[in-house]
Length: 307
Image (tube, helix red, strand yellow):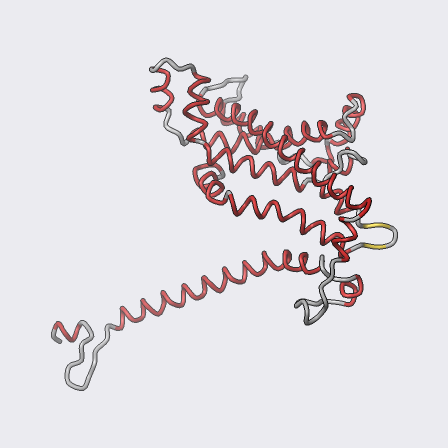
């Protein structure tokens, strides 16, 4: 067989093709096709509940109760009744106040947890601590283990303490509680983030006359920016979606969005259209934040932030 024949050029009436290369190409094409099919199926599974919620928010009670309907203007006529029921009149005032409460509580809780968690994570990444038999690794794991504790196990002492401090049904009470509850997440993320930054950068700043805290603020924090953004977004989302503490510790003044969603269940039944409208409005800011800060989230989570 000549060189031209090996490359697949025809000799006479017969054309030779490399079978091994062809099989490899076919396997690669099948693999890519299966990968895209699996990813497409997973995207459909993840996005369909959002589509169902959005479409339910523009249905009438008859369309909701009638049964599964999927395509608007063909299976039902869209309407604003669900949105009007939660945005007009006295319900509109409650709707606006609840979203304002959620934004303030989630934002300040994220900032407080980020400040405290960053300093704790930096200390665990740069200094060696010893508390009896505990070392840095044990302390870090202790922070992470606090996430295993179920909220229902601590709600009674918290309720008694908040009643004595007059923090029930207050934004400050929820901000303090959410900051403490999400602090282990920030500590764990920022410890790994700071650990991936070369210590030589701080040593150079110290040689130039900077203090440890000054090097932390001017050198380490800017480099760890993606991790900070990722940690803040995670805490913000967790605070925004938290329901248990909000339902127990708030009544009228500090109610949050999840509490408002649950309030659509009454003795008269479930207001599915109103619940879907509130849920659609609640997930919209999170989707916008995720799209705008996607590159920061990816950088933060892939730079050793989450193992």
